[in-house]
Amino acid sequence: MAQFTSADITKLMSQIPKGKSNAINAPDLAIRMGFSPAPNQEELRALIRMAIDNGELIGSSSSGYWIMDSLQELEEVLNSLEGRAQGTCDRRNNLLDSWNSKNPTNKSTLPHVNVKP
Image 1 (cartoon, rainbow, N blue to C red):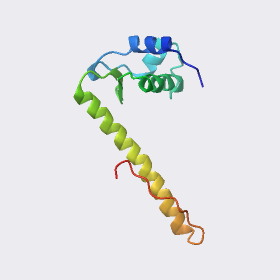
Image 2 (cartoon, rainbow, N blue to C red):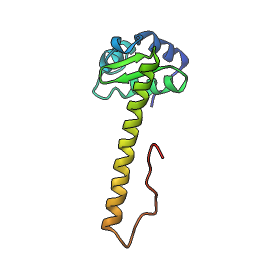
Image 3 (cartoon, helix red, strand yellow):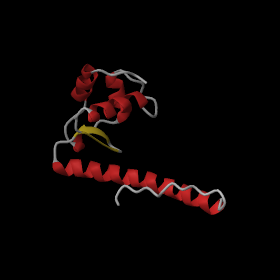
C-alpha cells in the first residue's frame, strides 16, 4: 500500500469541490491525483481514508466525493455509513447463525454484532 504525506492530502483537498451538488466522481478524481482510474480506485480510496483520519471532512455518495459544508451533508454521510456498517454486521450475524444451525456440535461462541445496541 502506498505511503502518503501531508502534501498528498493537501493536493487531494485542492481537487475536491465543496458541497455535495459539486461532487467529483472517483475516476475523474483519481486521474487528477495521478492515480489509476481503474474500477476500484484503491489508491485514491486509501488516501481519502487517511485524509479523513487526519481531520478532513470528505463526504461520498454514488455521485462522488465532496468537502462537506453543511450539517445536513454530514448527517447524510453519517447515516449512510451507519447503514452500510449495519449491513456488514447483518451478513456476519447471518453467517454465524447459519454455521451454528448447520453445525450443532461445533457451534461458534462469538456474539452477534450490531452498530447500535
